[in-house]
Image (cartoon, rainbow, N blue to C red):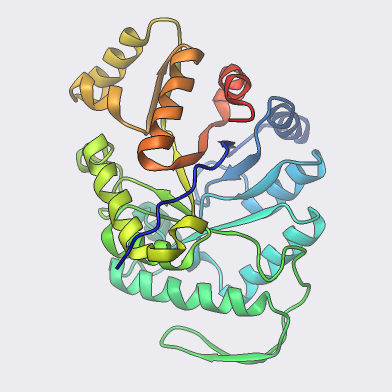
Length: 316
């Protein structure tokens, strides 16, 4: 089977933020992100110390005019897909079509334990996620539908409101393991490359899977699973390790020592951005060429320090 190479897409940049002490603090963050050239604001979906995504994202959209919003990612297990679909369509309507639907099968074990939600093995969670995604996509059409699955049963349902983006806002699926990566390649508009989170926690295996070699294997898997639709997929990465400073070697060595890994792993990992803005811009151009990563998300704490990088890469 011939594999289409993805086109070189222009860069998009986002911030991942989770909390603020007031309405003003949160909306100022969104406004700053927009004015600094960021394209999106995303949020995690956990039961930890964070704002609830739906109202917080709506507040961010209300405070801005172009900033796109979404979760990175909604956990399918936390809400029935009919409920989530209605909330998502409402977000898209009230933001004038600025929603991205990041959704996944769930991974953080402590969320499940603390809330009492059943923490099934990964295969069951992924099966349920697939059913939930199908329900959400069909709900977005506004047409009456029924669905019978192992986990969800929907009867003669007509969803309202309809989203502005038709037939459905862009779907982002991030994956670290082979099955989810293959599904993302077949179903998503935006594919996020993640380290493995199969153990339900961030551990040494997670860090090891941030290597350039591990990422190459994951991207190759996506390309082969996507086949002809690869040219329509936007490749995304959430860079967890960002240290913008004049001395790149100091930043790399300090991060490597923190995680007890070799400096080369950090220096070459697409999950890390280390050094001055000019070097980071060069690294991002090289990584887009090598892996296709054009949609890059950094932390909310990087909203000011990363702005010079966006200026360098504007229009590229």
